[in-house]
Image 1 (spheres, rainbow, N blue to C red):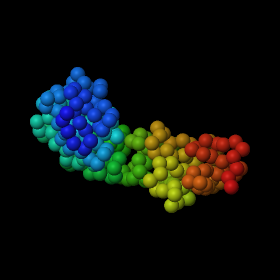
Image 2 (cartoon, rainbow, N blue to C red):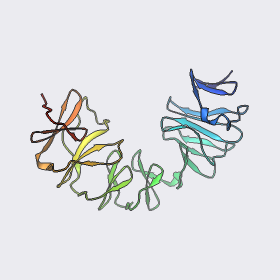
Image 3 (tube, helix red, strand yellow):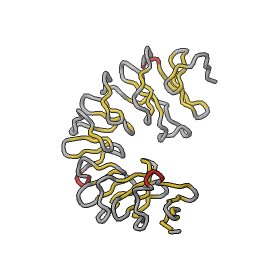
Image 4 (tube, helix red, strand yellow):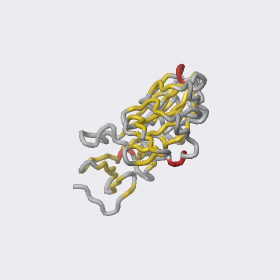
Length: 239
């Protein structure tokens, strides 16, 4: 048995994190004689290499090969953000970045600017104007005329009046919570920051909409209608 560090062990031709086997899909790929840990970030992200390849196992991606990364020169330059460099290319977890990370400017943990282009993590934000680009909240952003959610343009939003609905957060439903409601002058939206898209609430007027937190759950209210996770709940009455 070989202790790789941070709870990882190599036993024969199997790699374990404590009692759970990892890298099972890469058993025929790994050179076990040269396999070693490069660096770890808390209990979230772990980098390894053998004589042929570099590997990463993280909460952001499955245990995988970092394609193209050179093991002899690879180093982790920002473990918290999952950034590595092999002398030629920068990598975000298991993806080769399409820009020079050393010259990029971060807006926040999701968006950055490289030259005259804006990127959401590793993907270019199509149509974004880097000069006027700014963050509204977490992974919701804007430029002079468009709204972007998770790096994608959201059509038909009045970006100048788009904002969070007051009251979405309190000491229990904290700012870190991934759901809230937002509105522009025309519509109300349910925002799930880990969802695929903003959800417009059909027929709901921003002037008639409010929110209430009950037992750590966020509800939307429009007249007699109650919304939970952006879905109208028939017969629901809030205390």
